Length: 60
Image (spheres, rainbow, N blue to C red):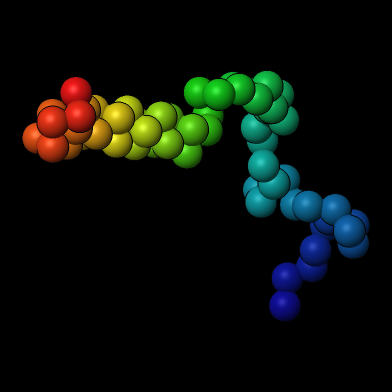
């Protein structure tokens, strides 16, 4: 069995992560919430279709 030269509780140099800690991005606001945009598209589709349905039945 090999003798460990690394003290207990420390990561051996060959196994550790060498990258720097990254800074977390700030919240992108409304651009990172696709449910809002999907709802907006759905609402627009319903209004658009409603116009043609109203024309068929003579309401507009």
